[in-house]
Length: 257
Image 1 (cartoon, rainbow, N blue to C red):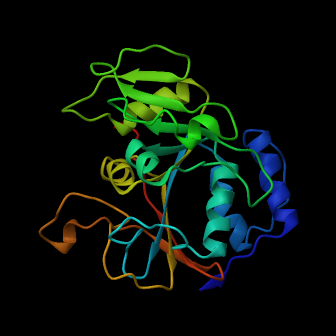
Image 2 (spheres, rainbow, N blue to C red; image 1 turned 135 degrees about the vertical axis):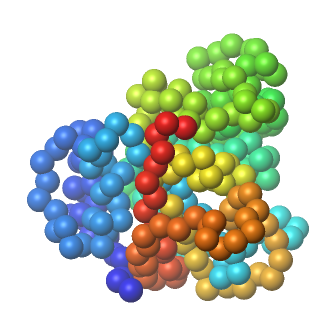
């Protein structure tokens, strides 16, 4: 397992590449674990890139049974998450995460820009006092089911639900139409599971903190399988973040939806 530390030189090179939309010239150390982990977000040979991140305990929990999710990730796991936010164009969460955790989704622990914040909220459940609406940064983009919410605004994207669900492929297409091509899917378990199960993830990062909670919600919700040969498998590298261990899984995204 390699130790992942990010030098200022590497981080500045990554930020320059983001500002140039992947077109700047850089002389990175390609054997540097930090470059291997973060450069796919900014060195894009394809039109878009989607990464999902889960921070969880050793037993796969992202909160206690009562909903306390604070301090599951250690300081280095949180730092890693903020690096991902700083390097992508947009960060996505489902409205359930907004209701439960009231996240800010801003970049605070590293140098770098805040991404466009996106909430999947088909039926308009987001509270009017949500931190995303009153905190730092511009209002989030809100993705809604056209049949359920017809209110219009520049920050609202209406999509047509299929079998009551908004398609991850359609969501990514709508974001790409606004120039948002690199996307972090941050939560919750249903949202990440939907993107992964529909083949719309390029990379999955699972950062595991060395604590055992014993009960509580899992970090991923996927359809049940009967046999292990039906499990989602992918090439995986592991990195020592310090307080947490990172599993970096590389999937082949199905861009047809």
